[in-house]
Image (tube, rainbow, N blue to C red; front, side, top):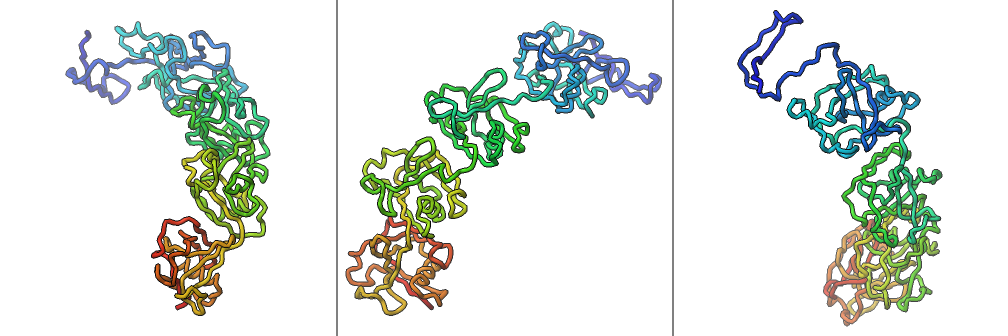
Length: 504
């Protein structure tokens, strides 16, 4: 109800006789000046912590309250708040033995009735101000509060109130559970986090990295390992979905958990729960086997690839991203150490009851021909039509035949491939390149040539159409056939049969 009667005040010095002003204005009462006369910055406040009931905290944790000499008391906004600020305030409150402190921003519900707090200065609304916000933009140059500056004005809401912990940061504790909901006796399981207040639940994989995994593993006592892996699995154990998700957006700056930040809120589903393995993959971590078409262990070097995980989970391997290095690494892992060659295909009807097996490995990637260099996931987006049928063993052999079906005496003819199991037939031109042609020519002994050409012809020889097509999607990384991969399945007709010329 008061009029505004002064505006645009400008003083040239500390004597009011140096001041000019206007009696007209273009202001609202939100711009009324509230003045403190005295030393600047404002007199040093005192601090204390309150618990969720609004009582003085008996611990080293609580909602931070600042009280000025004039009796004004309220919360502290987190704008620009730092660890240095936190330690300076903690030492000001008497926690002098600690050079460690942490804080969080309140959700506005840190204490009873906090959600109704109002920081408005106007007298008509002051009855609502149970605890106003009385400090903002705190900045401390060191651990002594005398080095700090701050503002008593703010642009904050109570969701930014500082909740402070003075003393060592109490890390959450982690455990691994097996599929029966018991504490895992191994270095593998569903990751469970428990906070100091007893809240326990799963960890979401948002932003999860190998560094995070190693930091947690070392926090659990697996200090000898600087290797860890994880996957996301929402059905790892019974009743998993009944557990709360209590950690998300974990980010660790190093292998010590003290370098990690995280959120207790999340936007996740249980399919994103972290299942963690602490330690490297070892030869005994996974076992591979081949099944024949009857579902029995194959007595040959060919069959449906089966992997068994350490926890007993057993099933097929998806071909997503599968390459020759993967195939050789697995073949060697199964004991086919004398071969530097392997081939595979995707087939969902290789054996009876194949579709009843789970798919338990996907996105396998091996950097070398040793399985210890491989990484993979247990989750997949595959169907059984992508199950790997693996052949470990020597390379196929090639020859050229003339129009009469006899072995060609020259460097030109219909390309015939014979696999190690004796199956023989033509090669489809899908994806065929000059590099492929030269690699095959050299494999047949035409080593002096770095030139080759081909055509597609379904009438190159008598009875050609009666031959099976036994190779497709040949892809060679160089002129040596050991760099080539291919499929024994095809979607071709004999009009796509490769007719090859080795040489210029």
